[in-house]
Image 1 (cartoon, rainbow, N blue to C red):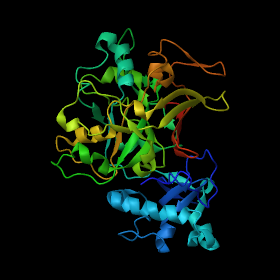
Image 2 (cartoon, rainbow, N blue to C red):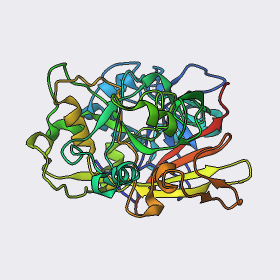
Image 3 (cartoon, helix red, strand yellow):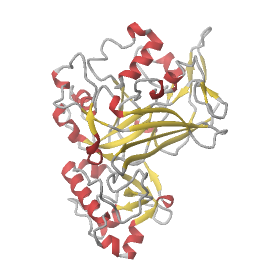
Image 4 (cartoon, rainbow, N blue to C red):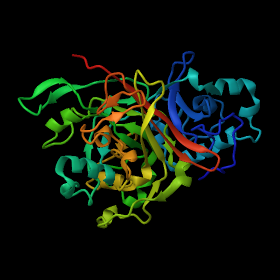
Length: 421
């Protein structure tokens, strides 16, 4: 279901706002006067309190109290017919067509909370987190640094979406600081040492939230995979490159990744992005049958990463990429994840891995931008970076550009704090 590009809300929305009526992303919020966390939808500079609408009987849902929980899990588990029904109801309530929400002053004052008065929380109770390696450009860039151009891609990379199980407990909503991690590293000469990571990096990714799961032992066919997707968030899977380099053979990432993952707080739904579907890159060789899609669809979502230091007043953009560059699609990621019978659960978070595009301007990590730390990134302040320094702030933004409106994700932002040593 696609909103009319010309549709407007009675709520004032700036032209470049990420949250017009065509978006309606879901999140969890609280306020100082109502500290209980509950569900909301972003519209312009406001949060629409869904618990208030539900209590007033203005949202018809299968189960009462669906939006009064401190996570979206109950709503996410309800499935696409319920999601679409709620979206239609919200679109009507917020439209310029006269409705009770528009004309009832007391209701409007209670239900529309200015964003600056809202505290945003993690949108879901996340039990499991899996990170993938779905960008061919990123995998090629990193593989070239480590193994040379002839052996850049591992032998299995073109045949399956590579992934690893991450740590769900250290996933943070945007705005929370990230502490520089400590761990073992291997100096060029000498024995391993313990101390703060010296090669702290960001990774520009898209997070996929699972709605209904699948029973243990029952794979999700690729043709049904997107029915299990509730929506997307921006995701920064922080990486301590020096810790990771020393530890990852033979079992893969561990302490170099598990210290923090930051996500944006608003979940943008597939319905909001329907108008921005586009073709994914051609796959050669063709994948095995269980990974073959009738139409290889992805989304035209622009992505940017900015770094702000204590000497910079505004973030300096160091990367511009796009979700459409991903070689492995969301449907393929889900089909592969479950092909062995692994059971996904409501609220599970899957990440695409770093999204890099063709050309240096689209490199989605400092590891690529600085060629493994061998060349310096020069900032407008005259400062240089190879990797992140203490008190650097990383801001990720993303949006799909429509005709006269923008479907955006808001910010995925965090500041690096010094290690505890």
